[in-house]
Length: 385
Length: 129
Image 1 (tube, one colour):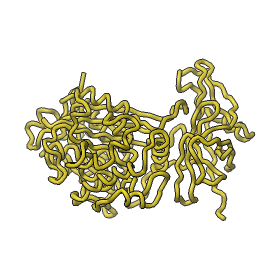
Image 2: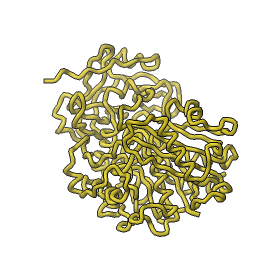
Image 3: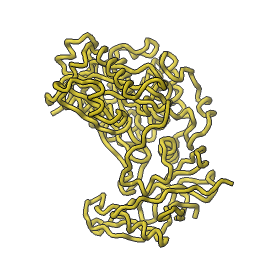
Image 4: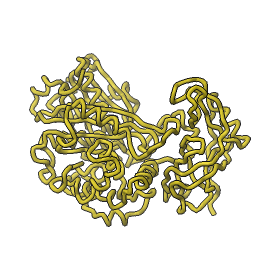
C-alpha cells in the first residue's frame, strides 16, 4: 500500500493578516477554510473529511459545529497534534484516508492569534515535575541544539545568518510579509542575543493568522480548474531524550521522516527543485537540510552559506514566500505555510522574482514541539502532474 | 539584588513519589533496569529501553558534565542558563546551571548537583564543580 499519487492538493489559502486583534480564532479558521474552498472551486457541502490540531478552539466537535460542516456527509476526522508540523502529518493522513476511500474532500485548517495575546497552556506530560522548573522555551531549546552543533561541527553564527539573509531576499517580494527588508549577515550578527548562540534575527516572526488546504481524490482534482499538484511521498517521526541515553541534539526526527518520504516518492534529493523547510529558527533549517540528506551531517553550515538557498542564485531555493523567518509563522506553527508555498511553486503561482523555472517537484518539511526537547517531524514530497 | 527565584513544588504522583521522598533527604535518585542493566532519567516504572518492569531506584553521585546549554539573556526573573548535563552514571537530563558566572559555562565542563527549595520537595539543579 502506498499513498503515492492518491491525493491532490486542490485548494490553498493563506490568511493575509499578520495581526488580528479584531477577529476571533474560530473566525480565522472559518476565513481560511472559505478561502481554500473558493481556491479549489468547491463548497463547504463538498467537505467529507476535516482535520485540525491543537490551535483549533475546543478541537473537533466545536470546530465542525462552528464551521457548519455538513455532518450528514462528514465521515472522516483527525485531530493529530504534533505542534507546527501537524498540518504536514494531516496531509499524509488525509491521503491515507482518501486512498482507503474514507473521504474524498478533506479540509485542513490552522489559525490563531499569538501576536494579539498569550496562547492557552498545553496539557503537561509525564516529564513535567522533572523539567518544567528549568524554563525551556523555543529560544533556548533551539539555542541548545545550535550550541552543540557548533561544538561538534564548527558551525558558525555567520553560516546560520545566511539562512535569514536568503529568507529576507525572498520576503521583499511578498506584499503580506511581516518583515520585507533585505538584511545582511552583519545585520543578523548585530541583532541582540536572545538565547546563546541565537540572535533576534535567527528567530522567526510571531504572527496572527492561519492557512488552509483542500486535499482530494485524483478524479475530483481533475474536474477542478487549478493546476494539478499531488502528494507522492510522506513520512512522519518523533524524537525525544528517551530516558537520557545517548543524547544527541544535533539531529532531529527528520532523519527518519525524510527517508520514508523519499522512498515512497521514488525520488532523490537531487530531483527536488524547491524546498519548503521549517524555519522557526535558522538552526532549524540547517539541521533539517542535513537530516533530509541535502548535505552531509555537519556540513549544513557550508551548504547554506553564500546565498545557496536564494531563488535564482543558489542550488536549493527555499521558503520563497519569506518563510517563518520573515513572512509568517501563524500560531507559532509553520507547517501549513510550508505546504502552501510549495503548492504555489508547483502551480507556478509564486512571485515571478522567486518562481523556480519548471518547478515540478518540491519538498515541504516541518518539525513540531521543541527540537532540543521532544519533537515530531514530517516530510511531504509534492509533484506537479 | 533580586529576590531568589521561587520554584513551584512538584505535583508528585505514585510512580515518582520515591524520587521526591529521597530528594527531601538530599538524595538524588535515578532508575536502573535490572533486566537490561540500563539506567534512565526521569524515572519510570517500566524501562524505556527494554520495557521490563524490573526497575529499581539507585542513588546517583550528582556528578555530571555539560552536554549543551543556552543562556537566555532576558526573562521576567532575569537571565538563566538551561542545559543538558550527562550524569556520571550515564543518563542526560535537562536542568539549569545556577549559582555561578553564567557567561563562563562551557560544553564539557564538570558540574555538580545542588538542590533548590520549593514549598514541597526540593528540585535538582547543577552548578560548577
